[in-house]
Image 1 (spheres, helix red, strand yellow):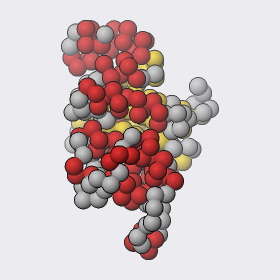
Image 2 (image 1 turned 45 degrees about the vertical axis):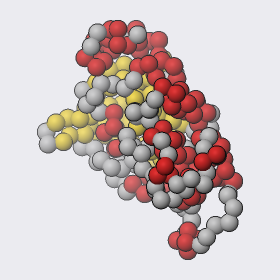
Image 3 (image 1 turned 90 degrees about the vertical axis):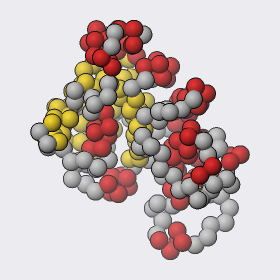
Image 4 (image 1 turned 60 degrees about the vertical axis):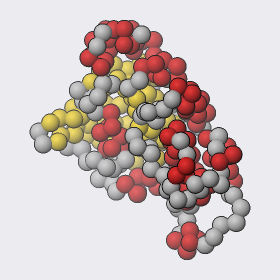
Length: 252
């Protein structure tokens, strides 16, 4: 892929420094339209910091971040959301007192004017119904979000992003703390979402990666260590040496 052809997210020369510590050190990254990209690396590699920059939570010391040709650095978080970028965090953020469908409806209405948001809605909109179907929580639609399991909360948060109809989803460790069954269901969910969205998944679990990733970018000490498909990444001796600081058995 050329620098611009098919690119949705383009990061060039990105540097982030915290009190003298270089968290991101000259990262170049291109994510194409329609990709399901996994961003992996050991703890402290700079994965979350990178998506914090993309979403406006952190300002870089240098470099550019362009989304669909629009420069993002310096823009406020809510303006970046309105451009079509959504993200989750390592800890799910849902409104516990609201029902599942109310959470989705609130997310779907983020572009509606305040008076419309305050009016009681009747029925379920097509956007909400679609998100509810994708995340598979239809049987819990009228249950308060506070009673959901850990995995169900993560799926609801992903559904809230889908309801906003973003072009790019950034998911920060979506399977952290999940049971085996929840992890499998989340992997299937990511595959479905990627059919209609560009998705970047921040992860450090190689087993999950092997099952569901296609293209992978490995970060180490704030730099891009290697990029490629799963087989190439697993076979790379640099990844075997540094991933989690353990032996090559960790990446097989």
